[in-house]
Image (cartoon, rainbow, N blue to C red; front, side, top):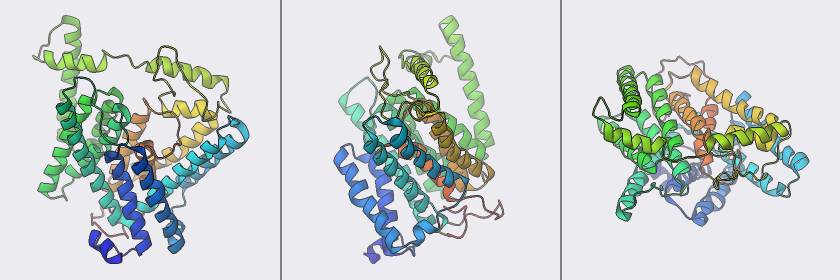
Length: 420
């Protein structure tokens, strides 16, 4: 077993049980892009990853002893404890056991992510990021092939566990952002950077055909942040100028019925994407805010039913922060924001570090993505773990270091916090 793991990750000197956990964690992250059925996906978590994590904690106690002790990690602990207490003392909805189960699963995943992206596991973090990028690109391409083969003209539904245009698109966008981050790195080979560029293009095309406005806007916002923190000033200036010209021309097209730049077809497509379909987001948010103000301190419980007349898909507030306030009250929202704020501050302070530049990009994407989707902060194995909780754990796993900001990039060196 040790030889097999060494052949997969030759730079690793981790104990066998710990290496097995790292490999299975990477597998679990990638499996959600591939597996649509619930049974093999859940088997990957409950039957493989969770036992390997428990064995690793037993055989290698250092895995949890070295977890960072910071405001962010204490904030994570406080949030999950609050959800437990809220379900036990306040909610009393008849689904308390399910809430305990969801909270425990989410907390365990965050602990796993903190361990996997610890500086001592830098080589595994490298493999995880590259695996996510390549898996997202391949499955995005396969989704496009299936879409073209079926000859449908509706919305593309990505393959994988998030078999839905909204969470599926947000999940795929993570792979594109990692590819963009790698592609802008001068320490990468030209061949690998071309692969990254191709990945961004393929996933970008898939996002367009999925026709989900929230994920597209979240992806574009994160791309702008990526170009900014990676100091791609020329490309950023060109894209901003082109974007302003397109927006101005689209406004002219809306007023006069034709484009000054000859982009009538493009503006028709944009109009169909952003204006032709009513998502009922504003009425949903208004009702969620109204219900939150009825019980601002205690909330309605994580399993309270939410619905809006005329909108069948409005099963939750479709905004993670508003939904947390609705379900758990304002204390729950404040505790949810505590680790998120700590992760943002950590990555902002180390934004010149390549690793934390990526964390900042993924955090911005996660925030933007959950602003128009999701409602409950804790779930059983679900893409929300990767979209929202994973970037927080990645940032908190490597707290602010006193090493010089201009420290060189050296893959596989676990002693440097900026290494990945």
